[in-house]
Image (cartoon, rainbow, N blue to C red; front, side):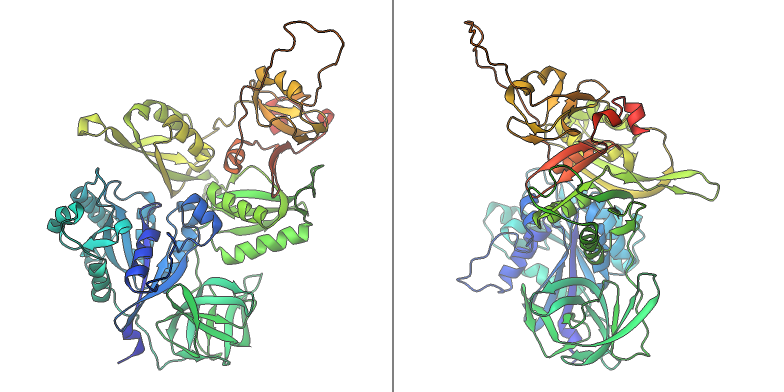
Length: 623
């Protein structure tokens, strides 16, 4: 019997926070991947520090489990819309997908996005209704919504007749029988994830491959080893390959022209649990890891002979946002990290773009500035956070939307569907907030009329209108709102949108902030800095109450005299400082401002530092 018959390649897809990584934890545990005495941390697949801190999956990752004689390769994918590029390129590696849907929330925008990609690749889907232990679970309704979504996305007859598994991933059990749920939830009956394993073996087909043909592999992911260099990860479509064999890489050069080069394989690995295990030979159908070429990129085809055809390259949907990355030119450059030159900044961004196919890099007319194109604010924020943790210092500008024009020259802009789940009391404020950003309400569900205190709204809104909206939405809903978006496509330009209606409080000199000086500025606006912080001319220290900018002196010290009055020495302290996170800064800045990012600080500044060279009037400084 062929080797590939003992293989199953599966990815786990879902909306953000529907339990993908937790389910993989228990699949690994129950398949015996970890020894009895071995300590296993939670969300073991979220290996990046940023993934653990934020509780989201950012990069797609591979693992495998063994069930009897069969090896199941599992790919855990991100659920956030900004990392959709990770999901798109993984689909070609697998033959089936587990679609996780929350038993209370039901299908959400990213569920639709990932399912659409899976159906278009012809993958066989197993629907997993997760979190059935939630008190607000509405299982029958969610199954109906999921079926409607399959039909809406044009699923074939075989895809629409999907098996359904009811699971509680955090307790590590599932069932195919809805009638068993009450006993399982009450603890009268025990179960494991064995029904899900059985369903994967029964329903997901083994990879369709040709072992007799020449070796052919599509590179879908990259990794790096300190010992053997760059690692190419992908599914082997045909043939087999051995260590020390000479093979050919079919890629493209910087001009987009086809390029072929030969190299010798230095190492071969396959996945066993969470480890890469060294092997002497890889066969068709398996997901393999290969070393020996430092220039291999995502989308390349690796073949054993020059006359073999190239597999279709991986392409993902085009970016909708752009952001300028610049060398740090602020007076405090190099004090807290490595003040890098433009060459080093460009090399770092090129390396990121090679590994993340959803990002693009463009040169600008200025030598020390580069434009990165991507999907969303969160994707940019993750890249910036990774770079500052690597010790880089640099500056970033305000994200801008990428426009298009149709045949008639009409200006088009990206439109998104925002799905909002919130307490009913916040509906009025949220609706007003989204409509002021040109959002059109397309759906209203739930509310006290349906016996629920929560409401789900759907808006069609320009991508521009969503910039800076997430934190404002969470404030209005007091942290209880759920917010998710998905790109709909391009539509006619919606006209001008209000951004920040306030100006900035700007330091007019270099020095250190003094509490006495800041106290005198409190009634002028909201401060971002406390006392004892270094500042320079042109650095933003707060938000002005009015729409124009205001140059101020935060370093002003109290005049010392030998005269004392009884009431003069009363203790006066600053009433409050707004600590700005990286995401809040990205949302806040205007076109004439930079964010200065260092390993220790995130500062705001004007592009033009000297106060006598810039206007304080909003219209003049932005035009």
